[in-house]
Image (cartoon, rainbow, N blue to C red; front, side, top):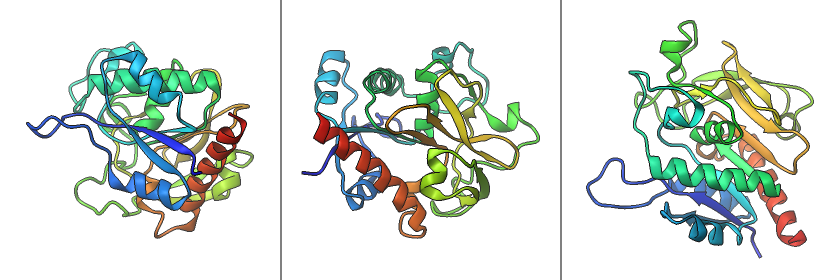
Length: 243
């Protein structure tokens, strides 16, 4: 059987019709890698969310809007984007549970920020405002989703390097927030040329990897991105077998 990979949905941000949804590219990338995506609604019921969680073999944290700054001890800046409080609550709950249980986690764009904040880290709320010398990191909506906006440097000796290879890697980029201070238990796995953190990973855990770019949009163009999902699903499959 395919391992079950939970993806918390995003909420009703741009429509008057109330809905929970997930980008199709995440589901397709997981399916191609051998996983079975499970969409997690943003229920206002921790017990129900954890009932879903207990059936999962892995957790994928997808991209989306900004986190509420109070979750990492800051006040809002003027350039903070759209927020989704029910999503913040659900994702932080599930991420903390997954980290406690050593459940495999793959965190993408907003997801890397959720992962960092869930363990006690902080964020830059707006890169252009807070890091004036930074490269351009947000190419939305001017470029297609697979546009390679800048390079990152993957560190040798990391899990990410084992999967993608160490050194320079061209990536797409659609974010204006970024990891700032990291908590114990996480370390930097890749950075942009301006030193903005582009990937983090857990220490001594089965699979905890967060990337700031969108590999789900690149799996058809770059086999290395497909390998990232395959590595995640492989670890989730081990989790199913051991469970």
